[in-house]
Length: 264
Image 1: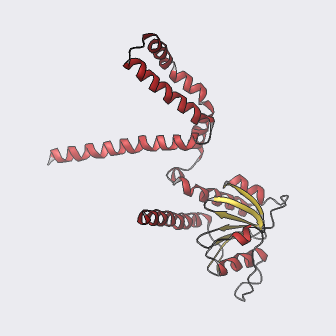
Image 2: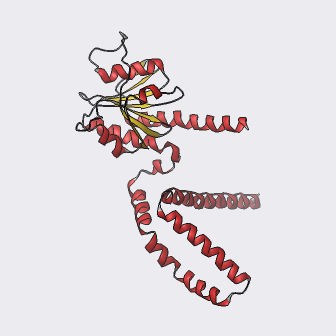
Image 3: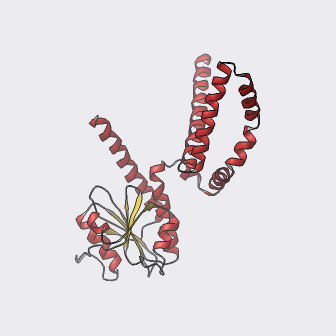
């Protein structure tokens, strides 16, 4: 029995060890993706292959040079990747631990919620549309095409009162902010309080004819609301909204993977 416990404990430790190492490499790949560091990494891999071949076919001079190069590799990497290392340490020190384990494809939700919290605190009006299954191309074409990665700073700059796009809606499609300043259809239903303004009527109007999730920040009160399936939920807590959106989009991602697997 003690032997089985020791074996099981050993397996758990090895699993944790492999998971942590894999996660570190995964975050490093995300960090350098799309930067010059990728080309440098490819160059280093080529040098590894050359070093292996030099030792294999006994190229003594080349092998000696590469041996001296690899001795100084740690210092070289620290200098070359200095911006990326600094950025990684800054992110590690500033972000919440709960966000570290969020799938990369769902990171846009954190950016949106963080922006909404600041917009709410400052009483800056905003309307953000999250496309689900129903295409919103007709409404995207009424605005200005952005097609950029979602970020808190981008959302805040769009809804800044000095921005020419702040009166319209932002539409997010496939985790990208595709357009801003979009015009949405107004709801003429009698169920909406007359105290609520155009943004709220527009959010309900779009949710009546599509399955989109529409997030609204009131300019007057800073209140956060969510429109879905023709219904408006008011006084929504941003942190609770974060959890709901994570659940919705995580399940959608899993469903997409299952559909692709079954289609093969």
